Image 1 (tube, rainbow, N blue to C red):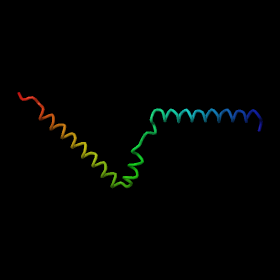
Image 2: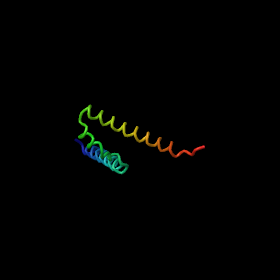
Image 3: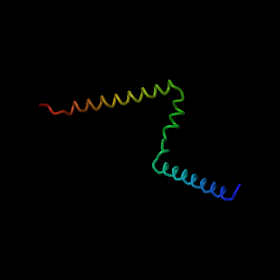
Amino acid sequence: MSENIVILMIGVSTFLGALGLIALLWGVKTGQFDDQSKFIDAARYDNEEELRDAVMMEQKKADHKKRREEAIKKRTMPVD
């Protein structure tokens, strides 16, 4: 190989490596990798049935919270 090709290959690989490092640092800075519950949930709900049950429980919690907020609104409305 000629010396010019080796220099070109080193320059291109250094540029691509720096670009990858910049992308990684940007991802860490903006919180792209901050999914703390992903791995815990993957271990906790490792099959479809358990995952379906977990989703159903979350929906029940949301419905209960919604009904509770509606009940509080009904109690605090001024009487005409």
